Structures are given as structure tokens and as C-alpha cells.
Image (cartoon, rainbow, N blue to C red):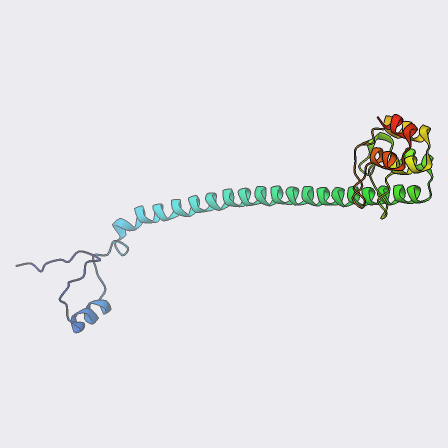
Length: 183
């Protein structure tokens, strides 16, 4: 009776330790990696796998370079946007500070110039709660009041410190001429 061949990779369940050790030291003559008949096709498959893996690596490098370039462009765009935000915030603060200085100095011509175009700082106020339009009411300057209205100043903007708008301030002072110009 010919000896039974075992399938490659299959291990007997009830094999003793001695039997397992003796098998590991023996060379399996039926291994496809040792036979010359099977070495050619396996070698061709291995070479094709190397070529495919190199192609995959090239595509992966291209993809990662594109991603890095896209990330770099996005990072630069975010930096530009943050710089623009910082510059616009600084410009807003500077315009508001200039308007506050003009209000404190009661320089109504400067107030009108700074409020041209309805800029973001048009409703800037002093710590005492005086806006540019409030300064016009306090100075009783109808021309400056009309100019500020033409520039688009919010007439009903209440000052944060006092809660009074320019119209309410004119009413509180009992100035019917300014009330008429503010309506």
C-alpha cells in the first residue's frame, strides 16, 4: 500500500509533539516552490505582482501629491482670509476710535466725513453714550444732522450707555426743531 500523502497546510489533530517536530525539520519534496515545473508560472505571477504593486505605488504618490497641493492651497486661503479679517477688524476699530474722538471734540464735520457711506462704525459712541447724531442734537447743528441722515445713519439707534436714540435725546432736551429734523 502506497504511503498516504497529506495535503499541504493540513495538520492532524491528534499528532504528538514528537511527530510534529520531526515533520518541521523534513523538507517536503512535493512543494510547488521547489519544483521546476511550477517555478516558471509562479515566478511570472510574482513578477506581474511586482509590476502591479509599483503601478499602485506610483498612483498613490500622485494622489497624495494632489492632496498635499490641495491642502496647501486651502491652508493659504485660510491664512489670507484670517489676515483680511484681522485687517478689517483693525480698520473698524480705528474708524470707530476716530469717530469717537470727533464726537468728543464735537467736530461735526469730521463726524459726517467718517460716517460717509454708512460705514460699520457709523453708530460708534463715546463712553458717555453719545453717538454722532447725538452730538449733532447736543450742538443743535441742523445741517450736520441732515448730512448724517443723508449718509444713512440709523436714526433710531439707541446708545448702549444711556439707551436713548438721537430722537429721544432731542425730546428729552425739549428741542422741537431737532425733533422735526430727526423725523
